Amino acid sequence: MNVKSMEEQISGAIVRSFFAKFESHLAVDVAIVGAGPSGLVAARDLALAGYKVAIYESKLAPGGGVWGGGMLMNEVVVQDDAAAILHEFSISTTALGNGYHTLDSVEMAAGLIFGARQAGAVIFNAVRVEDIVIHAGVVAGVVINWNPVSRLEMHVDPLVVTARALLDGTGHPSEIVAKVVNKAGMRIASPTGGIVGEKPMWMEDGERSTVENTMRLCPGLYASGMAANNVQGGFRMGPIFGGMLKSGRKIAGIIAEDLGK
Ligand code: 48F
Image (tube, rainbow, N blue to C red; front, side):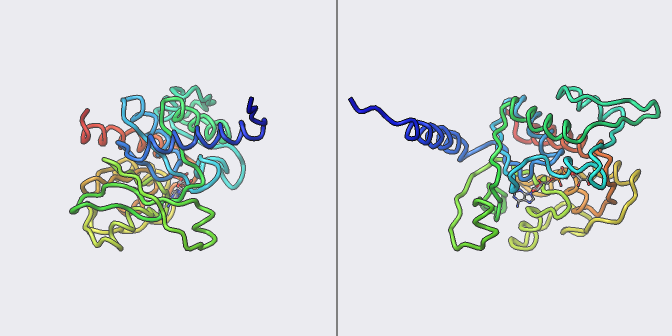
């Protein structure tokens, strides 16, 4: 009898299990680029609504800008209405009684990741979206490669995942929208038809405008969080995260409405 070694069984289990996950997500309803707070909230909402959702995160650890709190002090602040979204993820907050809550940024990052995953969204970490697919004026998917391949500038062709909706949750640089505007030369829904560029710090205005700036940009393409703010020219706001969470919720609603069932 041919008995497999433990080494062979463990390696085989990982390879088969990963490739089953990968193959079943070569065509998805929603591809989300960036596992920051806005992308993770959108992912959970859309997965709970029954859509097939894949998140691509170039770093090894999903969570985006949450982990570091403010200036590496691992606490963040949210407003009352945004705390309610965190409570849906079973993330705890401490009410300050003035409309704000503090919370542990590590619990927030871990909780958002776990919530998105438990809802059924699949996260591909250490995977960089390096380009987009466009079919006749409609954004239709992502071009992906291992982030280390990108960083080492290895000459390796990527693979492609098609998506009915593509969400740019890449934060400050709005990398995916930049591809659509600069590489594909498409016009998007913004004051200039392109990327306006993020403004300096103004917490109150930034928090409000992040949600307002969250929208569909062209057929198949959406932006949330700081990516949405960069596109529309909103102010930055630093370590208050309510706008990010509400932006994720808003864009999930818009995408679900566009996709239908
Ligand atoms: O920046 P990020 O946390 O996204 P967000 O949802 O939240 C912004 C806040 O964290 C913070 C803030 C709040 O006041 O201002 O900045 O807008 O996370 C974006 C994620 O996208 C990943 C990146 O590593 C980060 O984890 N990312 C960026 N470009 C790519 C990418 C790419 N091309 N492919 C895959 N992942």
